[in-house]
Image (cartoon, rainbow, N blue to C red):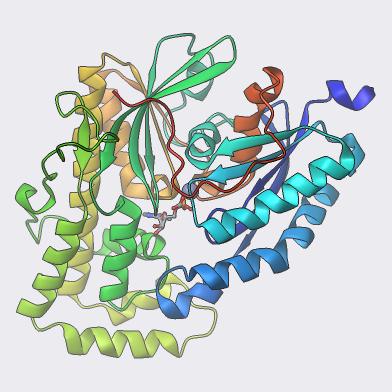
Length: 395
Ligand code: KG4
Ligand code: ZN
């Protein structure tokens, strides 16, 4: 069987609002990476509408898979396995990818591999040159049994993991999480309340350099983690765990907007942007006054500083010398600069995914599936969506 040695995995991802398919060779070489974004569909609502997401996934899944195969120049028969995101994510959205992957695997008589979306984000860093700012991806790939600290920071998650690889098998220990909103969710909600576009992260990223990040002093008490919940079996050991909390800063921004009577200018901006075709963050700049730009810059700086401080504190606590940062928020330019500077100062290696691989994609799913393929860790035909699927063991 010639194809068996080629190591081609088709990855399928449909956990949220991107329908994605990719062909990756031996977990490292991207042959194709197709992402059909649903941003224009959900944009008018300022957030993902689950029913619309499922419907769009259904519409897109076949064309996206076909174009991933065509761009890779391979046929269904060339594939060694089909990998699919099993969770966490929206139940209906996940089911579209899973059902499709199961049917494909069964009809082709190829193995099916279930991948945790969060593990996918971690593996995005190991794809391609994985450089971002500061290299270290290859070092992380050859990490032996020494752990790497992984910050997965996206629209749905803010997690810290100790990730280890031993003889190609990856294990994870969850050592930090958010107690309320994810960091990306805070970017999205703040952008929405300031009348900017969706998703908010790229808008805030683009506007923040035009404001003063020290203008609005968001204090720590506003983003302090809540106490550990007693009796919660899923809760982390508070002595070791890192807790993030991003709902407080969103409320603080809202309060600032009220106090400074910014609502009329926000409504004007919202209306002006609604009339723009082919909307991009640069369109918002002339519509933002100094106070708004300062607020945006200060919000971004506060969130990044909180992520940075807690991540480096955890690195110290667990004696790790390598950090990787992944997920949609890892596309943020200021985050990359500040994490890279901190890593250099502390003598730690740091790696980020290539920009296109920070947000949701299927190449990362195919990459995370490769060690499972080698270990023959295949999914049962009964595989179904697990909306709250956790990654790794908790302390
Ligand atoms: O990883 P992802 O595509 O989906 C989830 O798994 O959630 O992350 C999407 C999130 C959104 O909240 C989006 O606003 C945020 O990532 N994001 C950013 C940037 N690009 C995307 N946040 C800050 N700066 C960015 N440049
Ligand atoms: Zn994601």
